[in-house]
Image (cartoon, rainbow, N blue to C red; front, top):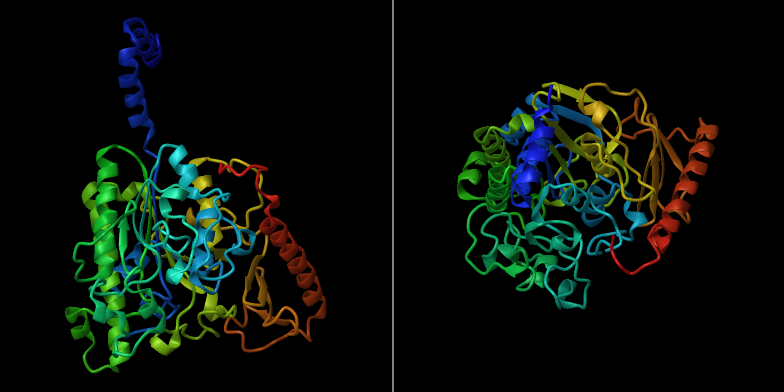
Length: 477
């Protein structure tokens, strides 16, 4: 029997090269049933700032709660750092921030890093970023806080379409100058210094000057949904990153959402109103995917970039610490994944996972490889997503931030507050997840083993940060 595709291909060759693109397009259309990937991230949201973790019965996040019932809850999912920029870089590179020099906020992602959108774009995906960027300046000649900075917008790191802001914006009416005060009309020293240059969104490099009113998460989602629909109409799979400004200051509550929390302390009323406004956009996202008929072929992963700021209303629930701390409250995030038909609805996992796992997981799903052998800190979560959970993570998760260090394996966590002065603490996260009892004196051999592993990993990160992982060229791969 003659193979139909072989016959047609050779017929087109006979008829002329002008018909070949039609055949290629048909084949690409057939082959591009690869899943769409959406990464959603909150800003400064803690473990107890959503409903699905079961730690807060006041905040209303019904859409996330529905997503949790239809997907997979991660009970031990970590941000790669205790602050935002480093974690964001880990999502795109699969590497710990200390490998690529983003030790804290405001630092740019090195151009020599290979990013997930770059790999997927080369593989035929459309790539889009929407919301907070914070991995490089997005307007030429404008450094952070007016200083000379490093230009590195999303478009320089593999994103074909981007509607992004350098750092933070009010969660309601983002261009209204009075909203660059916090919810209680107290000056916010960080955001006041950002006006007017850094309150603007940029649409593929063009400053957005039009009036932006209402829910900031809605503004972001509007553009993300347009990108998804456009990609679907072009029959192209897409990789979409949605990084909300919520729930970072300045926190502003919209009137209809504030009304849902009457009688609460004004600070909590505003905080929860902003969270619920964001949650509404999660509902729009999921509904849009269903309307397009692509929900079965779309993976959504949701998390936060670091722990909460308790002074503005955030909460890590029972966990110790908050933003800027490497105790669990600073890095253990409320996290979900949904992939209808692939992920078993209403399930949860305690498999230790981290934002650096995004890249190897997505490459594993698509049967793609890294272009070189530079060290990664993430591991593929595909078996976990598919319900084939492995009992043990193959390697521990390392953390560094502002002198702190920690090393977390399947059971134990080694921690010290100052790498030069403080002694090591040891916690059994399976039996003491809230880090109430330091057991380092009881298990000195465990401390010594984990200490050696941590030191070797820290040295590996230093080696990477020195540029050893990059080709000996100034050109980006």
